[in-house]
Length: 377
Figure 1 (tube, rainbow, N blue to C red):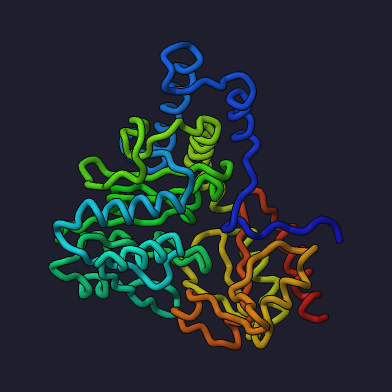
Figure 2 (figure 1 turned 90 degrees about the horizontal axis):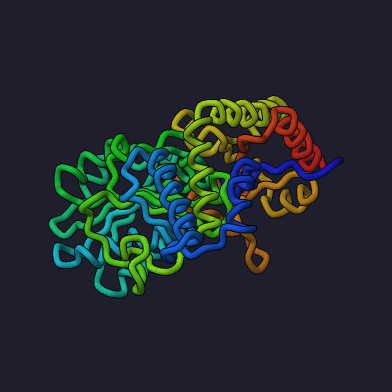
């Protein structure tokens, strides 16, 4: 059968060879501390600032608005917690959606222990948040709106520009988790209308353990940690120069090849889906929006199947994720699929396929045929 076809790029991506090449000098000889005032440190500092400019270019912002972090989870924590506490004197109300990543939802639940109140907005059957629901949820106490740019499970792209109109009109901070969208679709912060944006390196072909947080100039955000003055005091600690260099290069490649990579991912995604749907007809269901969707993502529900059984059959054939989890012999549906009210007979058998910039159409078809083989078994 050959090696497993990797179709789980929403979980993580391989490090791009160009990224790895850019990192090598900082793994081998350029080991300096960016805070040191001699050659080793100065070269490291320049590398960090060069990477900051590359990340800023991808997001359409100023380099000084980029804070390097350890990844998407830290960026989300810093944004939501930091904005909430820095604006506590203005109110205690946060608006988010029911389909956010746990790195946002769990932060909101944590803040509720300290008197903050969260409104969890519903989504429609395609996973879309209604901007009118956001506007209707606003109270005099609302200080933060946080809605992801694109959902990690079904790929639905949220109407951030429309939501931002409410935030701008009422002076409410607006954060988005762009871990899944960055590098796949445009993520210009001004076009999106956001004040805070989270980015994860390992979703865009950079190494794990590095990310970034965009903080619009003048946005009040409390420090995530306390220490020395690195990252303008927002995120003190000696910088992860190796990872930061990789993230910068990855953002540079993502901006350079955005359209080419988008087309590549769409072709492989559609080859997979067309092969499966031609063979299975109405026994396979696409979850999420058919048009407002990430170019690489296909959440597919197989009627009256069990996702965990399918994963077991695909273990050494295709690398994918399930839309349901098995605990103590019982299948637990994904909160995202539940919020979208996906019929249980499809939700229980949902697999998420997410192609990447290196996925070929031949690999996608091979993966589809392996899925069909497991279904027959």
